[in-house]
Structures are given as structure tokens and as C-alpha cells.
Length: 599
Image 1 (cartoon, rainbow, N blue to C red):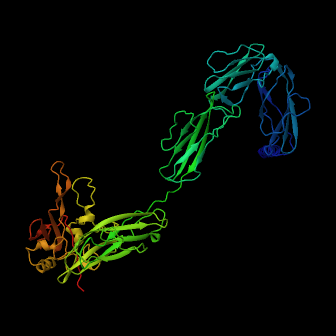
Image 2 (cartoon, rainbow, N blue to C red):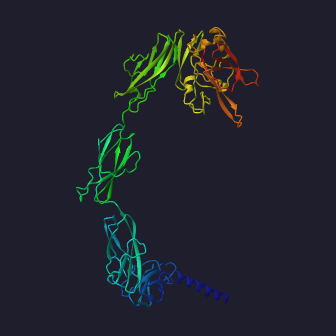
């Protein structure tokens, strides 16, 4: 018996599953309406969500005939819910047809009673033109207003032209009106539409009123048509016109560089202008007619480059030498914005007698010897391919002595130094002025003398740089130390300094190392710098001393006492003929002279 009951239960499940998954079962259409009855102003929601599609494998699709007139008003859709509104009173029998994915259909219909309802109008209006000026007559047209129950002939309209709460027109059946605004500005226009049952609705639109007259053409030209920063341009606005007032007298205002501010109104139609640099500039004009309406014009002018003469500059290998020295002059630093350096030409007046000693040439480097001692002003004139030129000058000093001299080129930074042979030694005849380009790879600190904060004098170019002994020697104190000297040269030792002293005649012959002295060593009173503790804030500050009074030169010899970080140096004091040797703190900043390596 139990087995039979189990069989019947299994058979029931199989039958139910076959029914559930059978695609030949028709759908069961049903829907309801919310609300069940209503008025012509109501929108009904028709909901067919409870419709059965026939089986789980089928999908249902829905379409509607709202008036049951045999004409389907909606196409099939998978959405079971849809809205609809009846605009006329009556009894309606909306019909639903459902089709499933197996092609089987079913329909359903119910009765809907719709009573008459009344809704307010739906006002809409246009403004013609969209914008205008204080002379424009704007036409406001509300003929596009709709009403669900009444024709537009049964509606009335009134207008508030600036939406300030006060009606500017009474109620009227005419949906069209017009307005001229006396002032410029932004206006919000309000219309109210009223139906026979006194139901009313409002609508707004915005209109801009300007002082622009579109029929007035503002225009100008300029002469010459092209130019550069040296050109004086004339701007002429007399071509501005108004076809409605061909003989009218206009007023003009300009907005021009560099201030770009509108000028005062004037009856003068032209103005002049020049430009400080080559660029593209906007030029603006406004024109005012007899009704005080205006219009604008904006144009762009391109200012081209004004060819300028070269900026002459030259390097002197060494400013001090003697009557045997071949002074070296290099004009490669000369710049010209329009021309390549190789296209420039140069000529030289070596003694400042206002007579050129050379013709123009494209050679940038030249040597000259002065047979007589003295101070000479050297002039150089640079000329570009267009014939524009400029001149610069520098001084050289020539001593009466005949020591053998030379020229050093430091490939590290492109600087030149003079050299002189004193006895058996070759010395630099000016102080070192080296500073590495990349401090991360070559950390050398160079200081330039400064008399006061923001001293404008480039003292390093005159006196050379100031270095502490650690950087000057690169902390190498054994053997022959190159330090920061150029290739082939090195920091002098104490012994080499003593050899120089003996060569010039001893420790009381220091004046022979000064400019004009017989050695042509040309020592300058370059001063020195030291870092001291500020008594006010306890910080470190730099102090410069002895400019034009004394000078110190480093050697690479360090004291043997490891607790005394001092190095040997030699000092020259103004008005004293003696050399003053001694040891100084290696953290002081002194001048550096290099001596040539022995062959």
C-alpha cells in the first residue's frame, strides 16, 4: 500500500513538471486599472503583472487597445505596466492581448468609467527676436498654448514684462502682444493663461536687451599693413557704417595694448599705436551711433621682429701682460638675435685712437702685441649681414718688462688665464676663477668677494674666486697636488712659493709680484673670506675682509699636527714690501694661483 501511494505521489510530481515546462500551454491574460474609475484629468496605470505566461520557459508580451475599437494602440512590449489618459468623458473597455514565446495568445478586458475633469491650460510662448536693443520691439506670442478641454479662443492671457509682480496688461483673448524695453538688461517675461473655469497657469522666458545695434557695422583698418616694433601704425575706423544712417556722425572708442582699457568716446576716427615687442595682439573698436547704440569689432595684428644690431662682447685672454705678450681677443660671445655667430663680422681698434687697425672679418679670434707699455682701450665693432653694428670696449695693461708669457685655456669651464715664466717656474698671472658646472659630480664651493649684501660688482671676474684649502686641494696633501687647477697645472707647495720668493730677490721684494712689478705676476689685493659665529643668533655668517688691502695665497702643505687643521699660505699686505708666510685655518677662503707641472 505504501509503495502504491509513493507511486501516485511521484506520478503527480512528473505531471506537474510536464505542465510547468510544457510550451503548448496558452497564457492567462489579466490586468487591473489604478484608479478603477476617474476623470479626464487622471492618468490610469494599467497593470498586467499577474498575467500567466503559460510555462516557465515562455515569456509574455503585451499590447493594448484602449477604446476596444479593434485597432491596437500599442505595439507588443515586455513591460506589463503602462499609463494611459482618456481625454473625453465616457465608459471605456480597454483590451489587453498577451502572446507568449510559444505564439499562443489570450485577451482580457474590463470596464473603465471616466467622468469629465478640468485641467488648467499649458501656456507656451515665443519671443521674437530672441534678443535686441532698446529700440527693438519684441513680439510675445502665446499662440502655442494648449488646453485639454478648451480651444485657444476660449483662453485669456495677461503679461508681466519684467516679472516684478505687477501685470502690465489686462486679461485679453489675444495671445499676442509686444514690448519695447527702455533700458538694457536681462528681463524675465511672465504670461498667465486662464481658461473659462478660471483655472490658470504661468510660464516664463528670458530675453536680453543690450545697447548693440546689429545693423551698425564697426570696422577699421591700419597702415602700414605689416610692421615691427619700430613701426608706428595708424588705425582708421572711418569705414564703419550704418545703412539706415549713411551720413551719420559716429563716435569711437578703442581697447588697445598695452593697457587694454576702453578709451573715452571721441568723434575722431583714427589713432596711432606702436608695439614694444614682437607678438600677436588683439585690437578692439566700438562705434556708437546717433541713438547711442553701439557695435564692436575685434581684429588681430601680428608684429614681426625688428632687426636689431648685434650685442658685441669679447673675451681677453689676460688683461695684463708686457711688451712681449701676444694679447688674445675672442669675439665669440657676441650675440645677435637674427644672425648666426658665424655670419657676423668684426673689426678692431687695439689702442683706442679711433682708427680701426683691422678691416671687417669673420674671424672671431685675434692676437695683438703692444710694443710700448701703457693702458690701452680696445674697441671692437660687430656687424650683422644687414649692416647693423654696435661697438664695445675693454682695457688692457701692458708693462715694460720682457718676461716670457703665455695663455692657459681651462677646458672645464672655458675660461682663459694668463701665465708668466719667473725664473724656471711658470705661474698663472691671474687668480683662479674655476667653478664646476655640476656640483653633484664636482663639489667645489667658490665665493666671490662681497662688500655688502647684493653687491652688484662681479668681483670674481676681477679678483678671481675665494676657496677654502679643502676644496682648493681636493683634500689631497701628498706629493704633487693638482687640486682645482687646470690640466697640466697644480696647487703650489710651500717649497715652490719659496722658490718664487727667492727668484724675485727675497722676502722683502713683495712689490715685484704686484701689477707693474718686474715679475709680471700681477698679484691683486683680493681680500679673503671667513665664516664666523654670529653673536646674535649663534648661526654662521660669512665675513669678507681686506679688499684692496691684502691677499692670501694657499699652498697644499698641511701642518703635521692632526689636531691643527691649518695649511701654509703666503700673504701680501698693501704698502709693505715683505712676504708674510704662515699657517691659517684650512676653512678660510683665500685666492689660488697655480704653477705649471714640470716637463
